[in-house]
Structures are given as structure tokens and as C-alpha cells.
Amino acid sequence: MNDTWVYVALAAAVLVVGGVAVALRSRGAAPVATPVAAPAPVETVPVAVQPVAPEPVAVAAPPSFRDRLSRARGVFATATTGVLRRTTIDQSTWDDLEEAMLRADLGVKVTTALLDGLRARVKDREITEPAALIAALRHDMTSRLASAQRGLNFDASLGTPNIWLMVGVNGAGKTTSVAKIAAQQIALGRTVLMAAGDTFRAAAGEQLETWATRTGAAIVRGAEGADPSSVVFDGVQSAAARGIQLVLADTAGRLQTNTNLMDELRKVRRVAEKAAGVVTEVLLVIDATTGQNGLVQARQFADATQVTGVVLTKLDGSAKGGIVFAIETELGIPVKLVGLGETVADLAPFDPQEFVAALFDE
Ligand code: GDP
Image 1 (tube, helix red, strand yellow):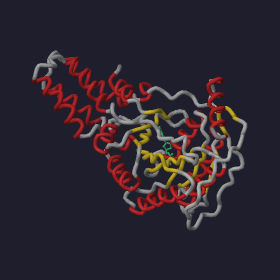
Image 2 (cartoon, rainbow, N blue to C red):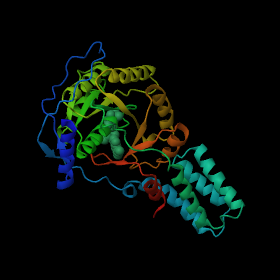
Image 3 (cartoon, rainbow, N blue to C red):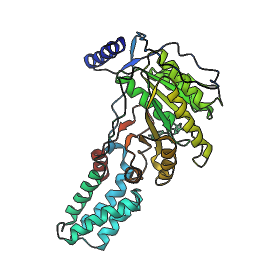
Image 4 (cartoon, rainbow, N blue to C red):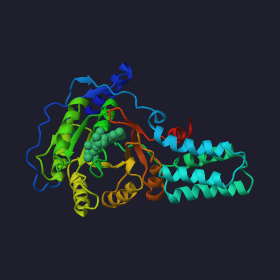
């Protein structure tokens, strides 16, 4: 076991014994003012351990899906109330269910597939009661989401930083999600550096700097308008030199119709991997309130950057959480995290069972 792992083990022990979240603040994160013109491949930098004083960071438990999904639940509650009011399963039953599923943005494909399966079972007299039909729909919706691998990829054996790239259109919640993920990873005992790669949006760097201070992460920023790839490259190099385990790289997110953005993101990924780290996650941040439009975005980003998971933000206050089904069914990308509010604690691992229960339970 090298020093890093001794340190990580110690940090973990502190967490277990203390039962508190621990921040490992890396000091002296010099802001990067000059972009690297042409980052060349570099040798892996041996991980140097910087013993630092842990500071407590307050990360509350994430809120429950049930508490935050009231709008989406409203859509399903109206339908199930209508279905259960009748004693038989008739055309109105199917109309109520279809309307709710489409309003919740499950998409035509998923809605049709789910209802066709149920229609066949009703025809075979396997399901005869409205209550059994609702129970079967709930079960089928849950099992549709059951097989995805939702764990965040972090390889502790790399000896160089893991890099998690955040991509998505402006306003989707990338910067906020970087902050939330940083707080959670720090609470797990990992050291984190934020690379403020969204150099096109002036406020993004400042926003991240504030979050870095609050969460105890290190940060590397570029000058406004600097090449985002260079900022990410410098961030990874800085993390490697300082023995920081995880780089969370924010990226620019202008309109998805801008093809240059996709070229740029391809470059960010290439350059990040030339630095002394490995990209182990590319997280596409999608705003749940955009519904099916999010799918179009997702396709473009997935093609450009080999997306490994989705962070679905603003699920609180959205009736359109059903986009989860379309993302997973049509794109085969797992929804790994969901944003349930604006505070740093409002990010939760996506739990299909809890999610579907929150849609149906009174
Ligand atoms: P970016 O342009 O993709 O970096 O987006 P930002 O991180 O700046 O977020 C845009 C807005 O969405 C901000 O006002 C955030 O507070 C808000 N936001 C982000 N995630 C969530 C969420 O899960 N729930 C809610 N309600 N708001 C969110």
C-alpha cells in the first residue's frame, strides 16, 4: 500500500469513527491565468501525498424522491384516481393511463410498449381489476429501469486522477452539479479538484470558485475566453502533481445546435486524456423540465463525447420526470444522479424503485 492509500484509509477511518463528512481541503490552488497552447502528452506524475487538515463539511442527507416529485406525482394521481373509480377496465382506463404517461414525458415509444404489454395481459384475463392493472404498470415501469449500472466509475487503483467530465447545454445545471458531486465525493473521503472549463460563461468560474471554497475542493480556473481544453488539462496536471484523486471538469454549454460545441467537447476529452489522468465518467447533464427535447440533446452529446451517464437535474418541480425512461430505453445511457433542488445536498443517486413509488404513492 503506498502513501496515498494509507492516507485514503485514514480518511475513511475518520469518516467511519466520527460519522461526519470530512473535507480534505487542498491549499494553494493557484488560479491558472495562461492557457496551455498545445498540451503535449506527459508522463504520469507520481502521486504525491499532501497531508492536510481535514475540515468538516456539512452535507445533509439527500431529500427523498417522494418529497420532491409532487408535480409528477400529481399527474399520475389524477390518472390512478380515475382508473380506480371504475369497477372495470375499459377504454377510459387506457385513455387515463396513456394521458398521464405522455404528460409525464415517458415518450410515445415507452408508453406504447408498456400499455401494449398490459393490454395483452388484460385480454388473457391475467389482469381483471383496475387495482391489479395499476400494480402491474407500476411493477413494469420499475423493472424497465432495473438493469442499468448506475454506480459512478471511480478507479482508486489508477495512481493518477480520475476525470469526470460534465457536459450539457447552458443552464442545464452543470456547474451546480459539479459543486454537488464535489461535496458528496469529499464527504466520501476523496480529494477533489474542480476544473472550471466553462470559460465562455463569465459567471461559471466565479460560481465554481465559491463552491470550491464552501466544499473544500481545489480549483483551477482559466482566464475568461481561455481554451477550455487547456483549463481542463492544467486542472488534471495540477491534481496529479498534488495527489488529488478526482478532477471534476466543467465544460462550456452553448446551444446544442452549435456544431462547434461538439467539436470542442471532443477536443476537451482528447486533451484531458493527454494529461496525467483518465476520463472515467462523462456525465451528461439534462434539465428534466425540457422533457423530450432533452433526448435530442442527449443524442448529440452522446455521439460527440461517449457519455457514460446522465445527471437529470430539476426533477423537483418538473412533471416530466418520465424522460428517464426515454433516455434509458432509447439511448441506453443510465441516469446515475438526479437533481432534486438547488442546494448542495440536493443530488441523489437515481433509485428506480423509489422514483416509481414517488410517482404512484399518495
Ligand atoms: P450550467 O449553465 O449548466 O452550468 O447551469 P447552472 O449550474 O448554472 O444551473 C442553472 C440554474 O439551474 C441555476 O439557477 C441552478 O440553481 C438551477 N439548478 C441546477 N440544478 C437544479 C436542480 O436539481 N433543481 C432545481 N430546482 N434547480 C437546479
